[in-house]
Image (cartoon, rainbow, N blue to C red; front, top):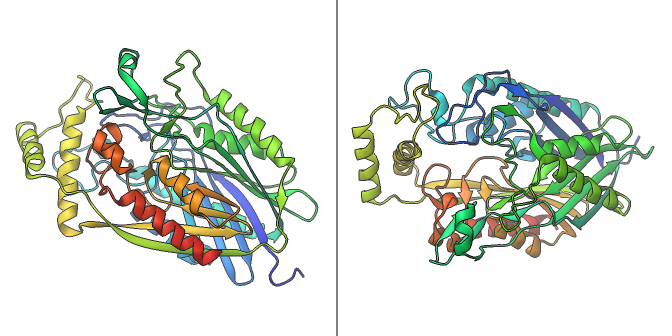
Length: 458
């Protein structure tokens, strides 16, 4: 029998590839039924136990998981696998060629969206149960594979595959993904990147892997706006790493705060970075890290969370009136094509703004959950939505852990969380709507909550 405080771990993955015809998320007002599968989607689970402490990290090859579905996933994990709901971290990679669980664009049903066009709201309700069942099955299988492990970790730098996608223009505004015609007016890149590649290995006594965590930060948008399914670089990297190991295990990729980070280098457009290049670079770096792991002795396992109420943005009366006027003049979708597969963005934004305004009247704040997990000398921090990378860098700099891996899109979807300076400059990520809805202080509140949770664990 292993000592009572020995760290135990198990991992598993279950296929959650959607049926053809399922709406693929990551776009605005566009019908995107899946027409082919480039590579399967998985729910990957890592289960950890030490004494009475249990933790489960769940990584899903999905765009996002809405708050209601996070609650249901945790409830099922507790009911079926006996893992306390607050001890489960639900992370989605944010691949833009996969479904989402829940509706991100328009949260409530509305007569403005015609019957059969619920995809305008952002999700596909017909897919939810398949994904939930697969996720809970992965958790259960991971728990069944529990075995004593030791912890090894390392961190390095990979600067060839991810870039800040926002640029400050000469007039002081910001532009996301500037086109060739805009480059002459670019003043500078708005912000930094996080080039860290993180690796955490959980090794059995026979030196085979029981599980692994990978960490990097970049928008997975190689599949946008096409109609094929792909797990993009996070899922493909996890699968490539899994194939390098012996024995039965799964690798989970934790994608960092990539609200303003993408795989496109606009200052060097002649060198596109496809998933093959990206995964090859990440694997090259990872293989070097694996040869130089730092090992913990008796690895501590613990988890803590902080929930902070962040105000929603308040819409001006003029903005509400403009949205109402647009929908009054166009009660049906403003179709851009005869086949009714694409709707004008302004129409979707108007509907989203009125939806957000109704939400704000009933609950003017968003309960932002920040979850921290300690695995030996390494910390995992789960934050909701799509924060800008500046927040992640602050969390890492302030963390008492030797390495800190931050995962965005964890335990809910709070939309984009820009810096206050970015909000002042404008640009796609800052336009008020359901997927960019929090007040300017949200990023700092997230950083503070993370620091407080980490201080409890270390």
